[in-house]
Every structure is written in structure tokens, then in C-alpha cells.
Length: 543
Image 1 (cartoon, rainbow, N blue to C red):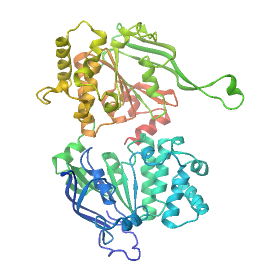
Image 2: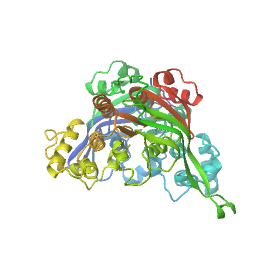
Image 3: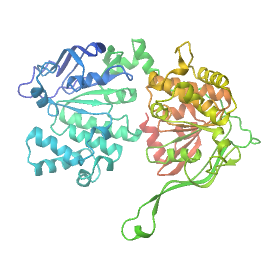
Image 4: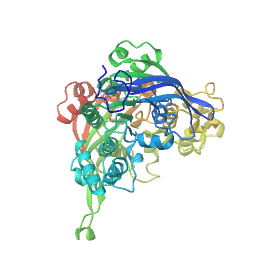
């Protein structure tokens, strides 16, 4: 459904789209990444532009304001009767921020770290509306208050690094809406946020959109967000819009194969039930696990001693052979700290054993434990050395744990591990000599899994292993992990904020909040009938 907003003086006819894009083409060095697309957005309408990484959706949004460097643009982008692609820089600068505003994906990099958020919002009001500095500062506080940020006057004096992810995103929204724009470009505005914060930001945008009547072009790969927020959806693949229409119609009856694949990308549960064999001891056992960090104390007390921040408090759990225990919670809940303690990478109090052995925090004494427990990190690009070849990355563990192997034997073992995760020389000629940057995100995560598997571990700690991946790639990696668990009898400690991943992968689940396990049990029971209020919020926010 399209909602019409009152026309402003000088606006186009009420039956004309606010934004009409035709034949938009974006090229870099002669290579087209957006290939002649057409779409329109009416006043007051919410259009979602959906696609995976590399589909061209973000470049499309940035091109409308000519924010893409070294790009050759062609086609038309008519906004209220003016072609944005043909305007001179001065005229376009007048439109940016006042008529068309943008919310960027990662607020920490979009906000200036040297200025408070209040100063940055006030700057927009001074430059665009000509407000005096004092009045602009007062208006900045009012805008922050409108976004629901707590203690807006105090938060206005904070620098970006002093705010949480959700607060930074609210500050970005306040800045974008400062001049009451007619069109808002929202580029993955909730991707970097926890699931409950995503819901809050989405509700906020929906409320503000209804109040102001602005149009919204939402760039996203999150189909749940599209269902909840948008009126219409346009699906992009390889720089082309392959399908568009009303959200309800497209989701109920997708016509294009790519759209069907996106909609069908929700993780599928394919795990075997772990037999209740009480004679077999757990592989991993933790009792009263506690992790604390020293923090400075204020005043005179800080001269003589330090305080502490307790990141994990009294966690007790076990992981059986062949079992997946999921740990779910928002940022700051303590779940990643729990994973690092399990890996022996942080000092802790309490008891923690793997196959009956404890961490000694000594390289020599812990060598055997390191082989039993391996890890797959969240971001495969940053966890793989860009200076090492595939053979060096995957075979590194063999150099440590099986140094007697010859170079030929080590190379053969590396090939076997890569084949097990679906990477072969037939697909990638010269595979072992390649570097991480030559692979996609999903392929890099397969490299990370192969690196962990090559030393034949018993337990894998999976720290958000798919959160940096597109939805279809996420499904493939989760299926790979499920297959490997069945074939090898692996145990997983799965750290995630994604309820769908827990539902697909876990046998047992622990819910963490503020460093404590607030609920735990079989995944079916906990997700179907959550007892704790926080668990209910997480499950409800996941849709």
C-alpha cells in the first residue's frame, strides 16, 4: 500500500513518484556492478531493496547522492522533478541531508570520533537550517530524546565510542532526520545490532516515518525486517532487479528462482538426537565458572586497589560427545567471554575440564588440550592471515601437533581437510597456493573450518560462525557443520545471537544476560515455552 504525504510547494504532481530511477548503471573501470535498473518510490512509501553482498544494492543507494567515488554513472534518478545524476555539486549538496538523508550501516565508522554526537547533530542544523549554535544544540538534544535514547542531554555530550551500538544508531537516526527529509536512505540500519535492538530501531523508524510522511528506501538482506517494515520489495541479483512487487505478494508467491532461494534460506534443522548414555562422561564440564576483568576505581580508592567487572558469573554446564550446546544472548551478555574461557584464553575461577583435563595456562602443558579444542571465529576475513597461503593456513596446526610429517604428507592432509569442507582443486585451480582474499565470505569460513578440523579435535567452539555471511551462504555453512558433526561425532559450543541458528543447530541452549545464565534446557522446550522474561523477549524479537 502506498501512503501519500502532503505535497510541498514546488513538488511534483501528487500522482508522480517522489523518486523515479530509470536505466541506472554504475561502472568501475569499465566493469558494471549495477546494470540498468528501474524502480520508483512514492511519497510516504517504504520500499525495501533486497539482495546479498555484491548484488549492487548499497552502491545503488550511494549513487543516488553521488557518494560513490571513481564510479561512472549513467541513467536518470529523478527526485521531485530533478535528475540527481545531472545536478552540479552545489545543488546536490543542498539536497543531501535536507531533502534526502542517509543512515549508514555501521554508525561507529560513520560518526566522527573527535566530536560528541550532540555536536555532530547540531552541525547539520547549523549548516542546513542556519540555526544559531545554542539553538542547534538544544534541538540536537530534542532530536535525541525523540529517538528514545535515555538521558538525551547527557548522551549529547558523549563521544561515539562512549555509546552502545543501539545508542549510536539512534544518534545516526537523529542526525538523518534533523532537517525532516522527504526521502530516507537506510543502508542496513539494524545489521550491526542485537535482535531486540533491531526491533526497537525498526519500530522507531516506522513511527517516525508515519509522523513525518517521509519515504524510505531500505537496503537490507534481512527478510524478517522486510516482512515487518516495507510496503514493496525489489530483489537485486548481480546488479539487476530480478523481481519486485508488494511484500505480501512476493513473499507468498515468489516468481524468480533467486527470490525463492532467498525466502527459502532460513536454517534447516538436520541434527541427530544425542543418546542419553549416562555411562559416558561429558566431553566438556564447567562448574561455577567465573570470569572477571580488573577495572580502575574512582577517587582515592583507585590509588591502592582495582575494582572488577564480572563478565561471567557462576556458569555451570556440560557438553556431551556429539552434542551441540548453544549459548544465546545480546552483546555484553558474556557469551563470547564464556567461549574464550572454554578455550583457555582467559583466566577464570571455578572448574572447567575437557575430556577430564583442565587448562594449565602453559603452552607446553596445554598443547594436548589445544588439539582437542579448536575454534571457528565470527569474521573469516580477519581471522585468516592475508599473508599466508591456503596450504599454510590450513596446515599450520599440523606443524605444531604433528611436526614429523613431511611436506608431501602435510599437503595431502590439507587437501583432504579442504575436500571435506567442499573446496577442491577442480573448483579452484592452484587451491593450496591461493590467498584468503581470492575467496568469498562463505568460502573463507570453510577454510576456517578446515583449519580447525585438520588436527581432529573433539570440540569446536563456534563463535558467531555465520553472522558475517549472507543468508544463503549461512544456510550452506550450517549444513556443512551439521554434516561434519554426524560424520565425526564432533561436539559444538555454539555462540550466537540468532534464534534461528540455535533452533537449527542446538540440542541444549543456555540464555545469558549480564554475565549470568538465566535459563537453560533442551532447545525445543526453551524456545517453545520460555520461562524467563528475557528469553521471551529474544524469541519474540526473532519472529
